[in-house]
Length: 100
Image 1: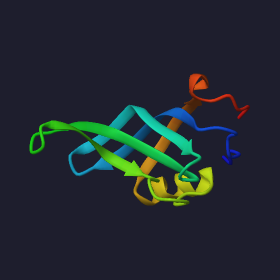
Image 2: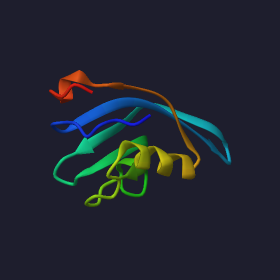
Image 3: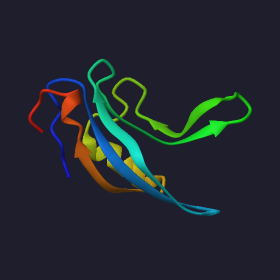
């Protein structure tokens, strides 16, 4: 499932699924993307309301350190290690000019 590094920042809308202690959770609005400044693929999803802070929060936020996930395959491998399945994804063409 290799994806070349895009010519500019890019993001893909993704559906992620994970089994939890309280059952399967699915996020149809997760995002996988590439950040040129960080030189890393990232992923965030499973947004929820945190009553402690009174703000929205992310249950999954990975790839926010410099060169943390240099390839798309590394990004997907880490999701799989966490028990998260990439069910489907598609390029958000509005976010990039590259031909992926």
